[in-house]
Image (cartoon, rainbow, N blue to C red):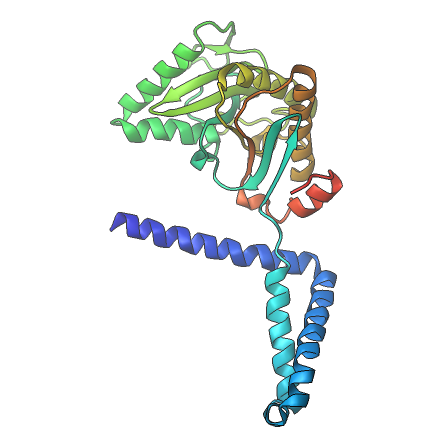
Length: 305
C-alpha cells in the first residue's frame, strides 16, 4: 500500500512538473508561442485543404466558425505543449560529463555535496538546510538522541585530522571548534556518502548574519571542496546543489550563482585534470525553475545537448 501511495505521489509530482515547465515556457516566451501556434495552424491547414478538396463531405461537415475554432484550439494545445523549458542539460568538458538538472539531491547516486558552516559541529541548524536533512536521516534511522550521537560520532571521526580554532560564541555552549573556510570531509551513513564542506559563518537557527558568505569566499570554499572530491570520488558520481544561494547572503541571482559554481568546476578541471570517471551533476531545486532557464543557459554557454 505504501509503495502504491508513493507511486501515485511521484506521478502527481511528475504531472505538475510536466505542465509547469510548459506553462512557464509559454508565459516567459509568449512571442515564440504565438509564432508556433500560427505555424502549426498553417501546417494543419495545408494538410486539410487538399483532403477537403478531394472529399467534399469533409468540407461540408468541417466548415465555418467551427473549423476555425477547432483549428485554433488544436494549434494552441500543440503549441503550448511544444514550448517546454528543459529541466536538464548535459555536456562534456575535458572528458568529464557534466549534467545540470532540476531534481532532488538526495535521490542521486554517488557522493552528495552538503555545504555547512565553519562551525561544522552545529546541530540546531536551520531546518530547511541540507545539513538538517542529513541530521534527520541519522535521527530517523536510530531512536531519538541515539541518532544524534551517531551523527556526532561520524562527524568527529571525519574531522579528526582537521585543525580548528577554539572560539566561545555563547557562554552556555562553551568552547566550539571553528574550521578554516573550505574544510572538506566525507561523512558516511549506511550506504550513503556526504561531502561536507565549510562555506558559511554559521547555519545556526536564529543566528544567520546578512554577510554569512560572499562570492570570493564561496570561490575559495568551492576550490577546496573540488580538491577533496577528487581524492574521495573513486569513480563515483558527484552531486552538488546550487551552492551560494539560501543562507549565504550572497547578492547574486540564482543564474549567476550557477555560473559561479560551474566556473569553479571548469577552472579546477583545467588546472588539475579529471575529478572523477563518473558524472558530475549540479542538482537544482525546483523553486529555481522560473529563475534559471536551462535553454538560455545552454545557448549562452554554447553547451550542446
